[in-house]
Length: 387
Image 1 (cartoon, rainbow, N blue to C red):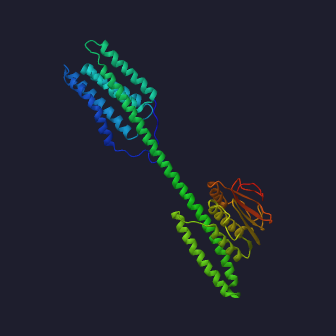
Image 2 (cartoon, rainbow, N blue to C red):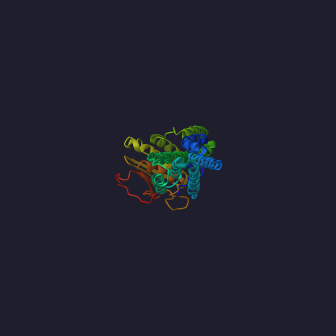
Image 3 (cartoon, helix red, strand yellow):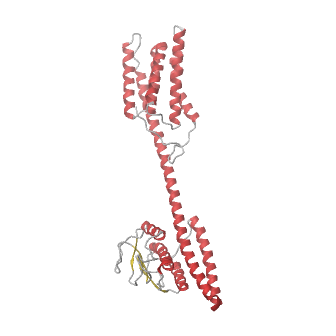
């Protein structure tokens, strides 16, 4: 007989906890079948036979109750346990039959139930078939016994009931494991979202703060009024970043393409970079604006942090965003086409059916492109995926 092993408790996919007393109560319903054999064994002719019959009934009841409680608790036995258990129950049935006669065959109903609880379907069918043949044959060949085909029907119905109960509990456990796996995946996705958003928010904001702080330092003696303005902008940016961080945790923060264009213009001005930015976002489809906003934020961060550029051009089309600079370019010292920011941007774009590409820019530096795959590609670039 073969059994299917359940995962250990405490691991992802572990069984839901069950109350053992419920399994014991359900086992008692089946042990009621042994009331008739116990009565017949108590009326045996000799005391030794009465003891044998009572021991057989007690042993069979204990074995069946143990197996039923174990199954209810969701603890599958070792590979050889079902065969040993069934063999022990058959021995108990034999002892009951010696004392109670034909009434002892009732114990075979519990044997069928035990087999269907633990054995594989094929083994269960074989054992139940053998028991049915025994119930049909023994009353017809043993002197003094009478055919009792109703007991055959009882054994078959009991086997079917336990098989259905087993399948139902297995489906419930599978559902529970699936729910736990979904919960684990949801938690992992939420952690990924928070870490990605934290990288994007802090990376961009701290880069802009650094640029503006450098500008304010240079202006501190030459133009104190403008230096004060830059410090005020730094304070506003820090407050905005804190608000973004709070919104990130609750998944309520939204970025807008128009807002990122304004922030990029301010950051490039502070860094002394000539920027050619679109003045409106009306031609961009509403569904694309959030991804484009994230892409512009990432492109701005890369230009400020790595490119050493003097000029930046941002081009918007209904299905395309291009960020070009005249800085170091891809593959040169200090410039990169990889990193966590681009990896996170690639995931965002992929989730809405868009692609991210990086390659040489017509301005001589790096081009970052985010586009719908079937959009018009009048300005082709290197097709290497951002990673």
